[in-house]
Length: 533
Image 1 (cartoon, rainbow, N blue to C red):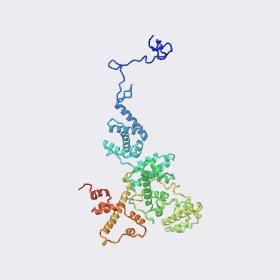
Image 2 (cartoon, one colour; image 1 turned 120 degrees about the horizontal axis):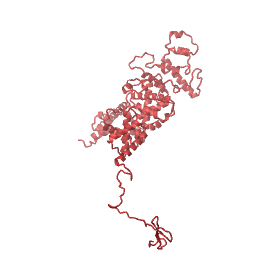
Image 3 (cartoon, rainbow, N blue to C red; image 1 turned 90 degrees about the vertical axis):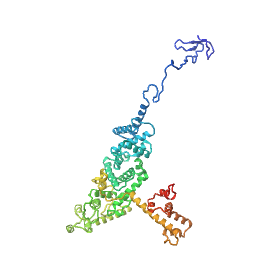
């Protein structure tokens, strides 16, 4: 019996249990605390503990620091490649490229996912596929410019400049059509038709230099929206731009440029003067059909004179001359035609005959007149609300978008072509690059500002010898209206650019240099000197 007192009752009745070896009070049954405490002293003779090393996660692990780093890097690579939607073989190529760039060390940190995205873009580009940098940046969660710089560093490090292909906007469009969520419920044949139509328009845009020096995804979004409207699928360009990771404002600008190009192409048609940007989508089927026929012709081939300039309307307005669409009387056509065959004139036609209609030679002037009358009657009937039996002979339910015959799909521009082959095709318009046109307009505008600034300076320095005052300036200075209106007109006529041009002219800067528009550089060199002697 242990003579220690029990802390519960104070009696000296503590006895040790035979089984557990702990002290228990025989009076109250309370167990003595800290009775079995044993001090473990360290040292040479002490018990062996667990050594904690860098790169281990506790007892029983065998991974060192490098192995753990490689393991975590492989997990990050698998996660991002799965989110990018790359196949197994391409995933292995990305892993090998990351391994080559990091020299088998891989890595951790914020830079490593950016490297994975850059290697994925390089691998896809080398295989002729499309993985836009903007899409990869959104998946990785980094800035597009940062990812682009990493792509350039990877290409330079692996010395891939010679075998690194240029970004193909046609491939980007095919990928957009294939992965666009709005086309998931459409039939495959319709999606394939839309792909060919869009490929035709994309390569026409390349020929019109709408993609030169521009980001490709806004052009892809613009063509995708136009093709959808031609196939009676309403899409918002903002929704398409966001899904393709393109800037909405830039996509709208490219869409407008594409419509303006189609308007210029339609000028060759008889009714081309009536086509504008607002109604070109309704006339786009005939315009695209005309472009497709032109692209199938050989450049330099001599054409027969059809009496209407450069346009053969036999196929363009064939839908308007069908009996079920535009019910002509053959006698009416004969009386209005200027180029009827003598044999056909002797025949007596008393009613509409579709077989005879195919053999009649009708002038293009007559067709243009008939088509214009058709448009006028159709517009008036829509306003009135009459949609059937118009004037007893014409049907107004015809819609170009409902007809599937306008798209033939026989042009080689419906397939992927090389840039040289695209430029050799004739689609009815040989346009200049928009950037070049805008530059010429800016040069002309600055030239006018320079001339106006010289006149103002000359009028101030030599008031008696100066010539007549400009109309704009005379209206500004000699206005009989109130003071506020004069100030407003002066603020509109003369802006900050005019003041800068005046300062540069007063400092004897050459006009050819001012026309270039590098105002900051010229001000530093000639006005502020910038410490340059």
